[in-house]
Length: 140
Image 1 (cartoon, one colour):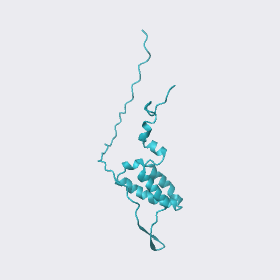
Image 2: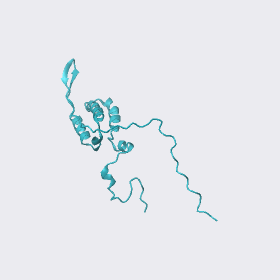
Image 3: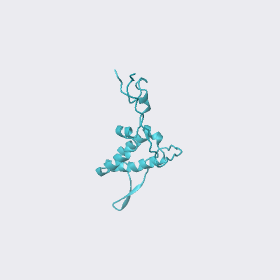
């Protein structure tokens, strides 16, 4: 008697478990700090550091970003250091661009960064009216 073709292939199961166990921490959301006032040495004089307006706007953008609700205190401190790099760039130090790009990518700054980090916006889930799951092609 003829059959219906070969049996389906078994799904491959990952057999190599991670050698290091995952560490799980209790989550504590942190509020964004203000850009600090501080002094820098210039021409052997201490002068107040003035944040470029563009860096102030950039900082506010991160505070208002959807990602911010998932930032802890260490994240904000890392972004604060990154703000200094941003300020260098906007003062004309183009050598800061590469480091800035790497740092903001870790927070999902650009669409490609968010895709790599597997970030999606909640509003996108219902944009098609629930007609099809995300990631599947529609056949006609």
